[in-house]
Image 1 (tube, rainbow, N blue to C red):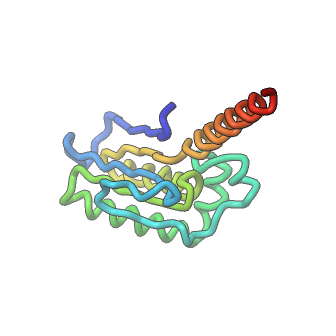
Image 2: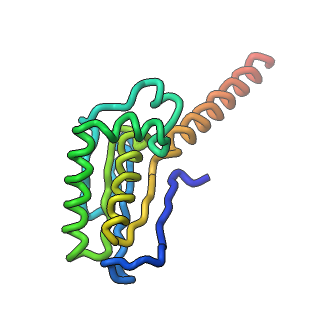
Image 3: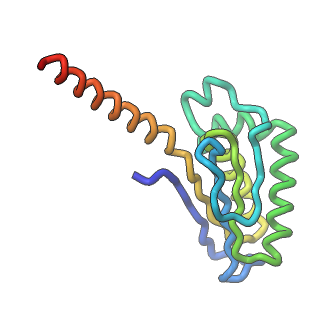
Length: 161
């Protein structure tokens, strides 16, 4: 199972970008380390978190979570700043990797990357999205359960001897 999700848009509309131009916008969690390769980095760790209920029940791809945080003035301002920065940077760097991080890479950064993707494609930039750590917590919990079950089995066998 992959620990990332991605999508890209290939529409037959007039764009300002050349076929060689592609901006990749990636969400990530600082908990799992900063990506090794990138051109620009934006940090959302100090931005307000979504409600606890939404964090426990959904992720940044959810419309409910996006509505909860992306209409807040601090996010509106930051998204506009990010989009302007990427748009300006992409003029001289057609193959760019932009990373946007929060603590776990599942809520704030994912929601912001989704919005930035929509904004950049509406400006005519060929843009793709990757969510590096979106599924990582689920994988980590599954592996921890497997380890715990394995240990439990090991100790049960020890007690039987």
